[in-house]
Length: 111
Length: 115
Image 1: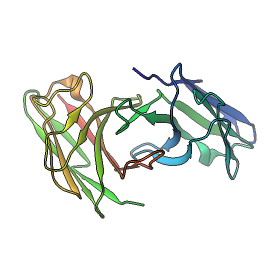
Image 2: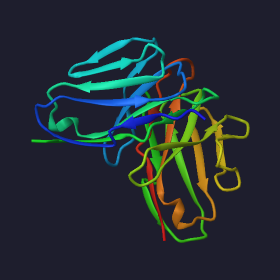
Image 3: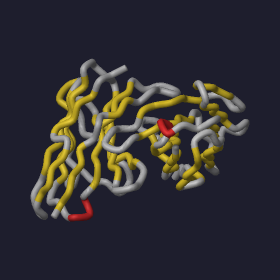
């Protein structure tokens, strides 16, 4: 069974601060995805990383895929209240059809 | 991107009854999936809905409890059978076209409460 461990589970910080969220596994993944989910909605894809060592930037968000493709991180610079939400990392299941998700990081950015 | 709708958006049901959830996509897609998200938790894959054949279930989920249909490339249903309070969750449909790093798009979910 491929498990994805996310940390921290909860994070509450002030607007303007920086933060990093981690996604770790003992298994190698062919790709990892990061989603953001707001209450009452389905997850929305932020990024897909497929190459070990890859770094992708999306405005104030920086995503990194570990060299061994077993871990990933999401770094947010100068967090804003609009960044509040549940951040989920996900990777393909063993059958490579659906996705297996981490438990998520509940992020709150206080004004 | 794909636009996905689910019906109903929410429901409150009695123990022992069944509820069928519909998922409609605005374009033909290869893959359709059903996930469960228990209160405050992450998503767990229930099954892959296969067009014209039986769904492929993940460990811990069985067809008798969660029968799934997929009559065409834009529509699928998930039934939650003989419900108990432990089935109270958000049920989400997602779609994709397969392949490495494929993007999956999620519906808004169906919030089910079983009394």
